[in-house]
Length: 522
Image (cartoon, rainbow, N blue to C red):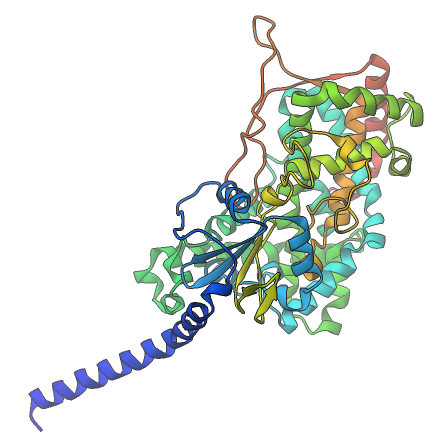
């Protein structure tokens, strides 16, 4: 056989193999496209063109819901995408039909390359996800979350003192509070300075990377999964996330090693990580699974609590004269002026609780409704065909600003939660998600937001800041960050004690908790 003939055979074999691999990868997608085309008349309505490169896609999604209705169809690359724009549609599908609407889309960048399939928040149905869900719910269900209230109360008293002594740095104080509660509840150690704590810094880096890669359509590998196997030397985008993955593993395993050390020394307070170690053998989890599971509340809980409280302060600056006097009258009647409000007071404070609900409704941090869901079977809803494998986005910006449920939705009106309303679920809003993917830390998060809103209203007057000429400085209630979670951009405010007596109570209670906080210092 001549050299030329051999070369032809090799090239032919290479082409045949390449075509075979291509067909193997593309046939499922082509079959899906044929199914969609054959039933295109049954699909939900939607635009014929897709906007790309949007910094705040939730704004466009709301425009689509207003134009096309509660269920909108988008063809984003090879994946059918459904945008839900009403609480009822989200409840009907994600809650009532949770058996087929509770999986996740495939996250190649964030879930596979960056996280090695270890983040339960992004995991599809699997034995791993069931173990993860069982552990998170056992660690943060309502009764268990009540055992964390003493920690939240202690840290809240620190927050009140921080706001009293340095009100201009309120955003830093909120972030320190949220970080310290989560880290203490999870690992049994406090965060005293959010700006210098190395663990907080590393977590912020990890979450920043995760949210930056979890943007639909940003990376070609999400559309063409075979690109995942390109060697890192030829794919800088892959090398970057794999390097971050090494850092994440080092952080999470290092935190668990410290937990084990303190447990062996008999100085570890009760915490979620301790619970995980006790359950690890029963569930057959590896050390790495346990480490990533412990990191779940740490990764997800800091920004949500701090962002919600920042939105509350923004609402105080913009609309405070409409609701703060009513709240303070209720607090004065129920609590008085000799002590801070407690968790035991909250059932007797319906107007304050309405302010909490309106805060979570008005500007949800998880503005896109959290991590998207995915369907595991074909379905029909109101005569519309929803294909298997669809990505489901229940955008809270659309749902919480739906005028049918919330008239004048950009107005901050706690009274709407004191009026009889026909809204699915128990909260009157949808901030914590739905069904099997509902936020496992919702009780912890709600407790943090509630106790701090009650105490801030009790102890402080929150008003617009004034400029050098004594003029009030207006704030922009639409100035929010981009990204997977959205929180207020920096704004100015005036936070002053209601009276010297209120300030004295804050100082006294801060002084009294110092000894109790010692057990959580490392």
